[in-house]
Image (tube, rainbow, N blue to C red; front, side, top):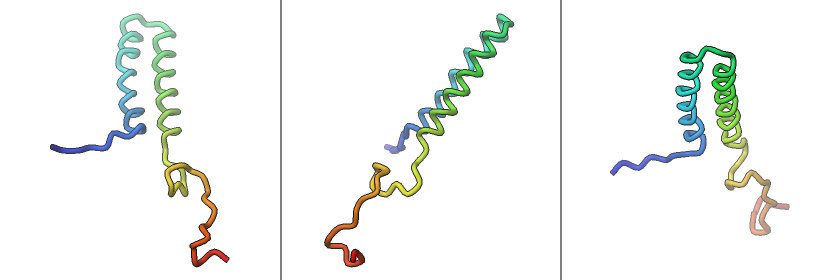
Length: 76
């Protein structure tokens, strides 16, 4: 059995599949609304993809700075 890690960022990327029906609607019924719907899907998925990006310096998984431990020999 192959295990793969399905992250929220991958899920946001898979959300781009929602562009297919909106572009189909835009092609079948040519009007501005179909193209605006496709653009909205792309913008929303782009925002989700960006929001799910790892935070720089996120070592403990929460993104909060942890105070040094009293047992830490480098703590003065």
